[in-house]
Structure formats: C-alpha cells, structure tokens
Length: 242
Image 1 (cartoon, rainbow, N blue to C red):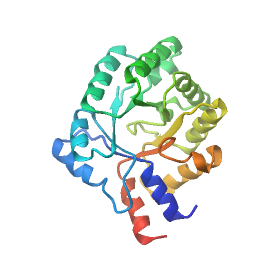
Image 2: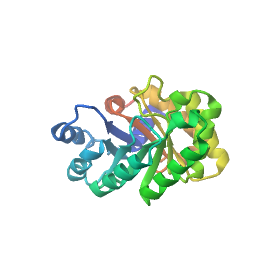
Image 3: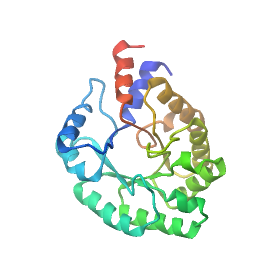
C-alpha cells in the first residue's frame, strides 16, 4: 500500500485524542477544529467524559469517545456504575474501558470477569473498547488471556494501552491480540494506542493488521489508531503526496 493511500485510510480510522490533565472547554474547542481536515475526518474524537458535550456541540458529525476507569484500571464496580451511565448521558458514542489488569495479574479471574460483564451491560449498545494495558501485562500469554476474556465478554474492540504507562503499544502485543481475535472467529476490532506519533510507525500497525486480518477488514468498524499528535504527520504525508 502506498503512503498516500495508507495515510487516508489511517485518518479515517483515527481516534483523535486529547486526554491531558490541563484540558479545558476552550482547549477542547480548539482540539475539535483539528478534525476538519482537507482529506476527511477521523473516526472519533476521544476526550475525558466531562468534555463530551463540548465535542458533541462542536463536531456533531463525528463519533465521540471517552475513557472509563482511566488510567488506573482498578477492579471497582462502583466506578463503572458511576462513570459509564454519566458518559452515555453526556452523549458518548464509544467507551474505552480500562481492564483491571493488576487484578488479572494477581489471578483474580472471577472478579475480572464480573467487572467485564457489568461494563458490557452498562455500555448497552454503545461501542465498548477494552484497554488491556498490554505493556503492563508484559508476557504474551497474559495478553492473549486478557484478549480472550474481552472477546468472551463481547466487547467491540481490544485496545492495547492507555498511553499513560512506560510501555504502550508494541508490534509484539499487536500481533498477539490480532492473532487471538482471528482465531476466535468473532467480530471484534482492534485499536493500537499509546505513543504512536509518526506516520511510518502507524503504518507498521496498519500493515501488520492487514497481513493477519486481510485488506477488507481494515475499516473504522474494525481498526482504530488512538493518538494525539499522529494527525500532524498524516497530514504532512497527504500534503506532500508521497
């Protein structure tokens, strides 16, 4: 796939993200302006829940995503019960829910499964992306386990990372997640997120997903890239035309 085609495709699959501690209504309004590019719009804009109404007003034609239990990923049902309904009430279309990965690492499988059941129920028909925090899980078998638990809980996407830990998305974790999704035969998407800033790095995830899942699978319904600064490099590639 040539670079221009890849950049256009990645733009359409981009979850353009602003999750900064110092975000304000005004900074989010400016952030929303970035979505209106000469080459189309991203798949979604991802912000903290309190800013969802701002995004809905500024960019009603784009899906609005938010984060739940972020970034801590504790195994606390009350957080889900507080945050998910509030986000939906504010207008969120997609919910990126952090897996309680420390509980998983501690072997608390039943507690994690219950957390996932509650999260899926509360998300109802909204798109649910499960952030497994693959860099913290570390071992491939743990990444596969977390992915399978998400698939069994009927999440819509498996997402690599919050972007708030030392290790975020990696090709190794991506390969494990995608192979697990493919082997399951389930209609589950994939989102690479965390530290993806440059076009060539993003393209490597696109190519990897394409090689495992097939060319026709690469669309916003199945494939996302979560990033805050990647848009700059995508637009540069498109402007230069090569």
